[in-house]
Amino acid sequence: MSEPITEILLEPCIETYIRYLGAFKVVESDYGLFDKLARPRDFNDFVRVVYESIRVQERVLMKLEDGISKKEYELAEAIKNVEINKLFRIGKDCLVRIMELAKENPRLVGSIISSLALAYDGVREIREKGKKKEGE
Image: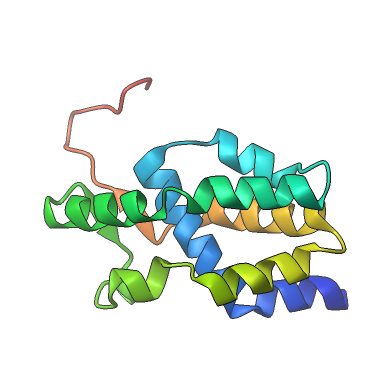
């Protein structure tokens, strides 16, 4: 694995952002954001997409907590007993670090983050038996 990719994959802030986007995916169902994140035209475009995802962070985390308490969502066993904010909240320092990593190649960083967030299964919607999700 090349050094820049390794640095991206081993960065704790990237891991937190992937978890947050994994929750965002389940709570907001806005898959268009993942497409935009994977294909920014330039660094400024990357920053706008990150902003778009973080702008709704409070709502996403509140919906996630509420959905867990109502048994609409569940967390993977490995993270069930960890506080939601510790797992999913993206703060200023992490945003700065993510942008530093993306400065040279925002498309690579965005594609990696987007792909891993779409594959993230730490947050799942609980479906009632016999009920299909809208559109299925």
